[in-house]
Amino acid sequence: MIISVASGKGGTGKTTVTSSLSAVWDRPLLAVDLDVEEPNLHLFLHPELGTPVKAWMEVPELDAEICTLCRDCVELCQFTAISIMISALTLHTDMCHGCGGCIAVCEQDALRPGRRELGVIHQGQAGEIDYLMGTLRIGEAMSPPFMEQIKKRMREVILETKQDVIIDAPPGVSCPAICSVIDSDVIVLVTDATPFGFHDFKLAWESFSPLDKPMGVVVNRAGLGTHDIYDFCKEKNIPVLAEIPFDRSIAEAYSRGQLIADVSEELGTVFSSLREKIRALAGDFQEEVGHA
Amino acid sequence: MREILIISGKGGTGKTSLTAAFAHLSGSKIICDLDVDAPDLHLLLQPRHEREVEFHAGNEARIEQAGCTGCGTCEEMCRFNAIRRKDDALFIVDPIRCEGCKVCVAFCPEQTISFPEKHCGTWYISSTRFGPMVHAQLFPGEENSGRLVSLLKSEARELARENNIDLILSDGAPGVGCPVISSLSGAHCAVLVTEPTPSGRHDLKRVAALCDHFHIRAGVIINKADINPDEARIIEQYCREKDYPLLAKLPHDPVITEAMVKARAVTELEKTEIGENIRQAWEKIEKFAR
Image (cartoon, rainbow over all chains, first blue to last red; front, side, top):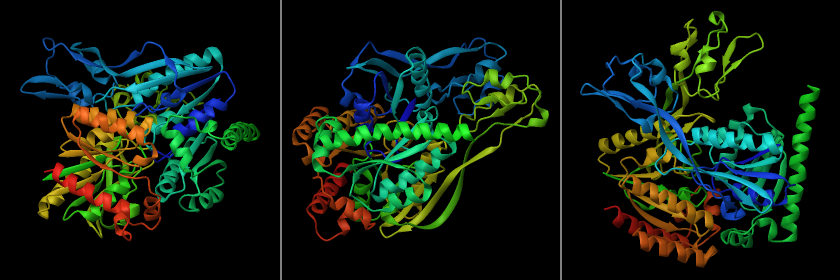
């Protein structure tokens, strides 16, 4: 089973939930940080990481001597990554999306596969938990192709071990967020009950609903904000899987890099109950699909 | 013209609440919400839309089934796994995965793949109690946030020129990727809002490195500083070493949420301690942005 922990708004507690849920989840488990722009899960699970591996994307390389300036590649490229300036073909490889179109369309073979660094992938071990993360190169704009490579590594690992996976997803509701949740079996949306949290939660729900996956909610800092989130979940039939109370001592524990599940017995119970509810949510959904 | 961009790396550090307060405190300016993915500033500023424009960007491949022979060229050439075989052996495009690269369109031997433009969202020019505002909403799950950010910036600049306004105050997105890079382009300086947590510090360093990468001056606000004074001191030390001016240290105060629930900037409420701190922070930012 693959579980994605996502949210619309940033800073609602995705990493708080992912780290503590990972701590109470059955072993073996693979924890994956797909928030490659700002990965934080390692700051709470403290994995020992192996040698980082660079991830690359294919971008074109030009042999200017062969290029006839026919413009076929310029006209095909949808991302303004190729232009002709003062009768020379110019590549803006930082704009390239790696579709391979220019290389395929060039009849002279003047364009050949080169590469651009996307970031580094780390694999390691946090106690008994297998750990996988990626860190986007500073200045790199495109996270989805990098995330695809981390997911490929993830699939290789679980093909062997068949273990469950918990993914810490990036915030937002556009391409990077979709890229992280699209292959999961269950989506756990973390929100707070503030007007910002509720507004972005609705966007996330709207964005992920077409994927037709079981979704549940964790309300963080419960007691702060308004009741709107609960009314909305009731109306849309979205289960509230857990509530983490608003409590300064939780914020302080987080600020020291502590797992929230370890703060008190009650909070430990919140997460073991969350684990059971996620399992049930995935099971019910399977059954529904089976009956349909 | 000065463009001040509020960003943070990590989400939820208080960018939007602070931007709203700065919008309240500053003189004549254009307000801009560059978080087009999950924008929130409008919840506090309650803009009245004066102009509403559809945002079209990029294209999406669509296989016209009547002409498809099922040869599989498109599937073979697509680098984004966006093309699938249907039950009847013909192919369809998964719009969620389609990157809009046109490769399948160009190489389809039957030329049966169309490439319509995509309607990805809406952008607005609005009026608010603090002045004109430029903002947008990308449709959920859409791409092209970078292009929409660029468009908002150029609209804001034009509006500023037309009205002889020399300040653009922008609220940015979390992260260090596509929309943030777009929002940094042409910015005069960036205000980085962080919090004294391991994530806050880690993400501050990355977003600060991004500002350095694009040669944009950055100052720092440590929000919720009293949650962990030791961690706050480590961040202060880091700022000194890297020569990022510390613009403010603000306390953790539930009044921020109270203001949010009332759809007000926190500085609009009855005199509060944090409101006074934010006032001083804005004075420093104005000097920093000169």
